Structures are given as structure tokens and as C-alpha cells.
Length: 606
Image (cartoon, rainbow, N blue to C red; front, top):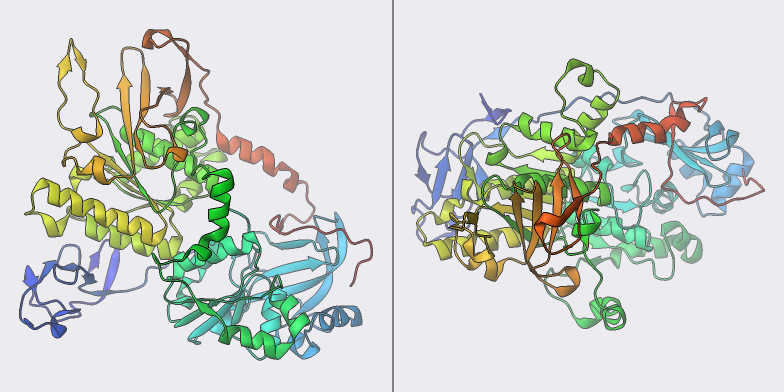
């Protein structure tokens, strides 16, 4: 038997009476005075139960793990572990002994390096998973790095943490070797360092099961801005209650700390690690740098979608939500898709979409692929192009669809979205539309109470997971004046005035069919530095691609709008041109890793 495509492992794990619509809660009833009170609502069609007392959702069954098979390149292990004196000396200068090098299968050999454009001697860090070689990190003497192209990205030293209850996460292989040198073998390293602003943790997606049993996760990444960006994202993915922050004092990383203070002090960094501060509780000194920056420079603008005209009047932070409204067929959902693609292109965000409005998923994916490629895909010849599978991969990687067998309920959607934050690192959640995604536990409340509780749940989810939520909400039926439909305001949304009072941001999308243009208006923006209240911009919707391009406004009259040239370019053609230089590489099976800093060193240390 299957539910939502997952095979059931253990049916009815709590022994609830079959076909019962209500039951005691297996999570909280045993602690209540009224132990027999049937406080949980049971949904056999979706395999879930919802408790109206403790507000928790639980699974009625256990499920078999659904594994996705991907074909990765497997490198060949060359047992060149008999290291030269130069390499051994280089590691000894960094506090790592020959014993540790042999223990960790560190190898050495000539390798073609794209940074040097020739074969050079390299140190080779071998990545194993279930005792099988999965990837190799090559490091040249001039600090050039690369990983094997097409190989799976995983943590370094992953097998060492399979059964441990604690794990140390560092930012480089030599930092992992530093802790191992101290006898702390449950240490893993990220495979490709950290970058500023964007923390791409695709490698975590490949081995998330290794972290599900951990009681403590020590985050010992570099103290620079890029390392702290990754630290913040890992706290979001693992949960603050499991994470402990390691302080390297005046040192950048674990290896520098080992060289300066020795093994005992490096070991003590774990004992001195601090819990992640309680969310929502702080003192001024916790954010003194940001406070001083505000005093001197005011607040910076938020995240933008990459469209200059719109970015001029609106930006947002994560941990908040945006309400998008407009009359039917005004292009609300289409504009939201434009925002989702914009956030991915600007910041690499992944998005989860729960949309009864855009079912089936094939139709929505067709709209997205048109925006990506500049054309609606309708023929076999288009499907057989080189760019089509790249566009499919883009959608598969960056957009996850939340589906329901029955009716869409907010509590269940947020529960699934929470799992997507952990497993895939989604940064944006789209709920489309409000009137088709119900609040299961508040059906009998009046409209103001219902809307209040609905928005509070969304706000809590956004803040807790540092996610941007976009909620599409229809207005009431608008009246016409002189044949022209009135423009909806925030107070016209179905659900009462709570939308304006509680929502941090609101956008109106209105389509003018006479002049073939779409207006996007800021109904509300929480802080003035994030946008301009009541400002609007005009866009043209391109029928060939589904993209929005800006208009030039010459006067205040909509009759005097000048349309810019439409963009029908295929973004994956541009991608192909950027990749041509690697096709000329004689070692095409190797992928250069550009996320590492380059340091020129005329004298190769090894």
C-alpha cells in the first residue's frame, strides 16, 4: 500500500481504531488529565493525524525510505600513500603527523590542474562513503584545488561519523586532520569551502541521514564572513537545539589554532563550545556591530529579484512573508513565478510550491521552462535539444512540489515544508491561493480569528526557518466604475482586515488588457528602507516566454507607455557558451573548483 508515492512499512503504528475520524493523541494524551479526550483528528487518506490540544502533526504509519538513484562518476583509487619527504614535512609544519596521514589514506601524485594548465604534484584527499571511494580533492603546491567532475559531493571522513552521537564539522580537510590528530575522529569537512552570502549545501542533501542520529553537532567552521554564512545555514538545517559553536579566538580555523596553541587546547575548544543563543532573546552587545552600522549607514535593502524597476520599489528579508493579491486572471501566480526564478538566479534559493491553483504540476513546470528558455516547449525537436535536459535539471533541483491526495491544509503543508528545509534547504515557500489552502484546526472560527491564526502560523514558520513565504490571496468581488474595475486594496482581500494589520508586505498585480500591460504595486512594505509604499511599476507580459519586461513611462497616462524590447533568449544557451572552455580541457573528467582562493607561490612546497 502506498500514500503520496511512499510505501507503508508499518501500518497504523499507534493502534488507532481503523477508519476512526478522531482519537486520543499518541503524543500528549498520556500526560493530560483527560487522557481519554479525543483531541486528535485522523486523516487516513493522507496518513496523518493532527492534535488540537498540543498542535502537533503525527504520521499514522511508518514508511519505507524512497531512494532516488543518481549516476555519479566513481574515481579510481591510486594507492600512492607512500608520501614524499616534502609532503610529510609540509604536514608536520602544520601539526599533522605521518601516522594521521596514513590513517586517513592521504595520497600524492602528478595531476593536471586547470589553475596551472599542466601536470603538477598534488596532495590527494580521498573521500569515502561506505568504504567506497566517492570523490578526490586535489591540492597543488600553489593552493589550486579541484574535485572530480560528475562525482558525488559528500563530507570528507564521512564514514567516521556513521554511528557516533556527536560530530565536528570543519571547513577544510586539513582542519579535519587537525582534530583527528588530537584523537577526535568524529570530524568531517565540507568538500568545497564556503562563500559569502550564498551557502550551497548540496553535499548535505546527499548524506543527511548521517546527521539524523546526532545529539550534538559542533560547528567549527572558519571565522571569516564566508564560514559564518555556512554556519548560519547549518544551524537552520540541523536546528539550533543540536548545534554548538566553536570559538577559535584569534585564529581563522582549526589548523591555525592547532599550530598556535597545541593539541590539548584544540581539544578544549569542544568543551568551551557555546550553545546557539535562544531564538528571540538577545542583548545589545549580541548585535552591536549591526547596531553601529545602522547608526552610521541606516539599514541595507533586502533581497531583490533582479528586475531593476521592481527592485527599485520593493525588497524583503527572509523570515517574513509577502501577500500577493489581485483580481482573477490578473497574473498573480505568473508574477510569483517570476519572483521565485529571480531569487534563485540572484541568491541560489530553492523553492517549495503548494498550489492547488497550478495543478497538475506538468502545467506549472511548462510555464517555468518557458521563462527559463524563452519559448513554450511544444515539439519533439525542442525536447531533443541540448538545452532541454539542462532546464529540466534546473527545475528538478530548485523547485519542489508539495502535493496532497485530498484537500490542502496549511498545517500539513508547513509540516512538509519543514522537512524540505532540513532535507533540501528550501529558502522560499509559495502558498497559492489562500482560499484553497484551509486551516484545519480553525474551521469553525469567525473570519478575523481564522485569518489571524492562519497568518500567525505562516509568520512563525517563516521566522523559525529563515524562509520567505509568498501567499497568494484573492480579493472580494470588485465593483466597476464607468466600466473600469476598481483596484483592490489590502482590506479587500477575502479574510478581513487582519491581512493589512498583520502582514509585513503586500503586493498588488493588476493586468490592463486594453494597453496590454501589467501593473505591480506595493500595497505595504514593513520598513521604509525595504521599499516604497503605494509605488507601482508597469510591465509587459511576453506571450512567447511568459516573462515580464518593463515599460518606459513617459507621462502619467497609461496610454503613453513605451514598451522595451522583449527578451526571448534561452538562458541555457548562455550557460553552454560559458562552459565551452572546459570542453577544450584535455582532462574533461576533472572539474575545477572555483570556490577556493588562489595564492601564487613560485616555489612549490611539495
